[in-house]
Length: 179
Image 1 (cartoon, rainbow, N blue to C red):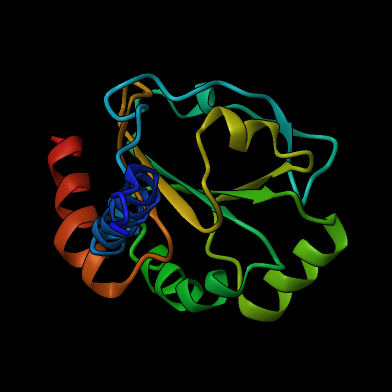
Image 2: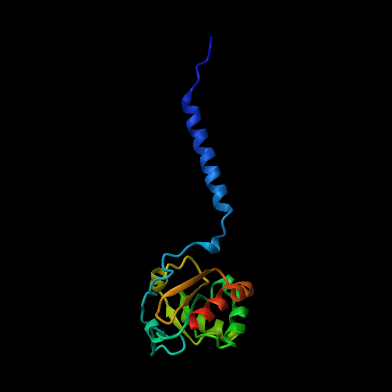
């Protein structure tokens, strides 16, 4: 007795091979290079309380006319500890104002973290519920945005800023935007 070929066996096999190929391609990509739809668009506006002065607020509108950095961080973020010494060294250059956005954090934890590790920020705004992070398309912390004099996002760093990223990408961009 001759067995008939069963085409239904091929369909799951092809689906499995396609899924493996799709995943293999995804694993070869650098997650830090995820394109942001906000590049070359106005930075979302917000009004948030300041970490060290809860009675005061901060809005990106206050930074118009300046090139500045917005660094999204949290005290619970392990990668933020890796990035922090780079930010501290950069802040000593006074190249541009650096605003911290404390993301989904407890205020006492954030204050203690900055007290323990140093505070590189011109000021820190508190995004307790993460709504501003959503507006900025934050994938996870840390993330850093370079914002130009007109309030337009020109660059987004996903993950910790490394000395290489600072020297090769961020500082040259800041120099160009300050002209």
